[in-house]
Amino acid sequence: MAGNKKTGGLAGVSAGSTALCTVGKEGAGLTYRGYDIYDLADNATFEEVAYLLLKGKLPNRTELDAFIAKQKTLRGLPDQLKQVLEMIPAHAHPMDVLRSGVSILGNFEPEGGFENQGHVADRLLACLPSMLLYWHRFHTEAKRIDVETDDDSVSGHILHMLHDKVPNELHQKSLDTTLILYAEHEFNASTFAGRVITGTLSDMHSAVTGAIGALRGPLHGGANEAAMKLIQKFSTPEEATEGVRAMLAAKEKIMGFGHRVYTTSDPRNSVNKKMSKVLSDEAGDRRLYVVSEAIEKVMWDEKKLFANADFFAASVYHFMGIPTYLFTPIFVCSRITGWAAHVMEQRSDNKLIRPAADYIGPGLQDFVPIDERD
Image (cartoon, rainbow, N blue to C red; front, side, top):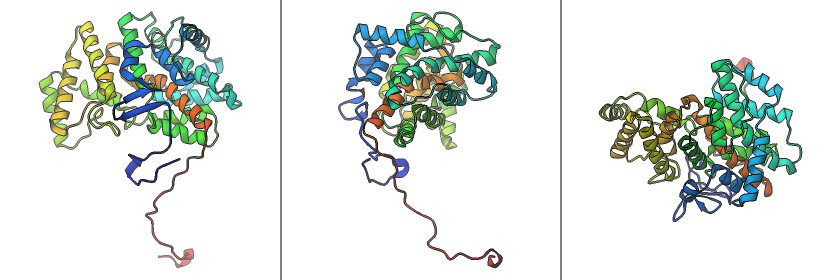
């Protein structure tokens, strides 16, 4: 692993090489294996992007059809895992549910040799939404849902299990697009956590479990939930403007703004913002959208902070009837593609990731017997 620049939180430090993604690279922006995120969001499906990340290239029609068909066969859950999901308390955070679900699945279906890594990646992509929605519906409605839907897409599968019906085309496409935007983002905190675990030659389930734990934190994936709670506090743009200015004056943290890598804008935000407007118009309720716009303007005018991918994604998910506490777990259902791809990439040229630390403690001290201590 390369890089010896000292900085807080490792910002700006190069910790390795990847062929999967560029983030904020001049002249490239956000790309997956060389494909611009805007091209993928406009023209590809999430399944094509998942194939690209996991298999190394965009699929042809035959390959995509086979990939989708395999995904449908892998959505089911072992009965023992369903029992565990039913035992997890209703008040648990669903990120904890997925963290536990992946760990338990690793016991029932161990990876074995690394030659099985492709299948494990496909399996996790297929069944993470099943875990999430089975637990959610059981604890909110006391209902054991069928998680083996016939939907051709992950987005359709999620919305179908959530609402007990095939989603309309706009909602399915909108969720599909957000899954594309969230699929991969280079050496972010959760991905790096997964690569550190992988570097010890541990199994993929362990690496993904660790990555979920990292994504759970509000400074990483949890920002969209916090953004939704902020947006819902205000009834009008004027109220939002006044309220956020007061929060800034009180030095309160506003979630969903700024980024550790991007300096002027998050390329994913413009896509989510457009979708939020379209979905708000469809719902006949523009309050959340105009309030979001007002908050975005205040943050830029006052702090020169831009909205990141999480901010408008919050209202996009809300307009599709997705409960706020499921926002970050749905992020997981997308990012599993990037995580698994990074696990496989790390294994292809593995080195144990063990950085040094700058010691700031006391100098060498003499040991004093306990009876002689003050």
